[in-house]
Image (cartoon, rainbow, N blue to C red; front, side):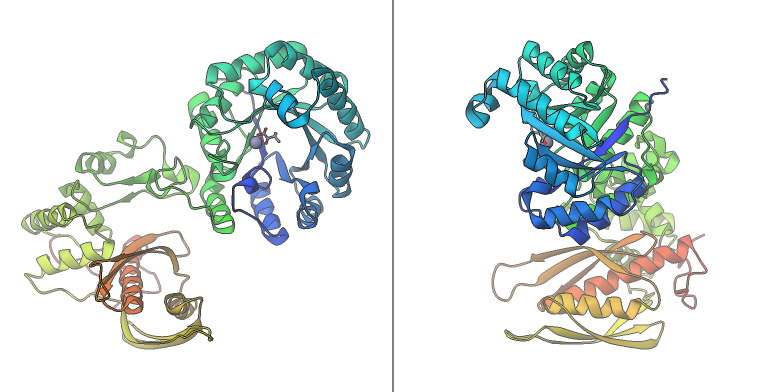
Length: 519
Ligand code: KIV
Ligand code: ZN
């Protein structure tokens, strides 16, 4: 195992922001930069200052915020770009110029000699401001190796601190990336960096290969956001480096998930559920074989402890489920069915799964209490919906008044929102804000028939301040009522789980959540 520490240049705020449709305000950029600094990245590429006044303000504010990380700005190999970056007060400038024949002939209209001269001149110019200078040979991996080496040599002689190898259109393979790193190393002592794009889904593999070949730094983005199919994802790279290659970074792994959620929320780029490390399903299990294994020993079906990256494991009831998994889930809600009840519950769960239904925590809770109570549903609800009124219209802000009975006590709140559902969600959150923060994490709506009489089937996932989640469902003709019922059922499932994990929680009901049956 080697002692190398790999540096992370985070470009979420520059290449990540180049994701089509993403545009961050200076405030949002600063919020993300603070989180990145806390996460432990070595360089924050805060933006491309020449692009707009707002971008300059964002970069300037980050540069002045006293970050531990080096704050850097991107610049084409042109004086005006470099001046603009420098005027933002950055500690580093990332200068780039295309080096492939495709870029030279069709975009830049430069000869190879002109490219070499302009690169060297602009590196020397940027260096004259006393900042760190990293040079990227854009489209490096489509540049013929002999010319690529000339570029590396020219900018090294001009004084670069770091040389970056961008796989601009994501066409490299791990072997190719290694060849380029070795070629750069053969003519330069400067720090070598790799910058990979994910067009063939190889960005993480290519970046890791570059590191294995001797690169010391990688350009990464949170959640892998970026142009087209994105950049190398920081969370995949950092965990891969450490767990697969024994290479350290300065990343605080336990903050990966919260940073990922923040970036997703502020950029509006949704994380695919099966995304490695930070996707919803990364530590979720449904099949009987897997849940049985994971309950016996998590390492049977998990590559590492989810807590390492700030996450918790969860199990899903469904047609692939088995007895052990369902019993485990029910125990987590305070229910301990006897063998024959458990068998019936599992049978029913599989039946519902065969009908194509996603079984929420509240569905499972209700089903189990019904079977365990001999046919009648056991009411163990802590929170009950007592009343709901919504006012909406074309020229008014929708508002909602929600009345909830919480352990028999009436709570009422009114709030506004972008629509009646949003207003009702806000009113519920307002009620809960004095007790615990309950956030709506996921909302899914399906119509059960295709006409105007359709039943709205709403399933939600709610989350408390400690990151504990539970899913709930509501089905009604009225979409607002269905949504509110789904949230209330999710909150009840959440409270049931919470009581099991911390019995002294402020929600402790008077006995309703005790195990209903069995040991
Ligand atoms: O992908 C790329 O080539 C870039 C450069 C600006 C480094 O993002
Ligand atoms: Zn890029």
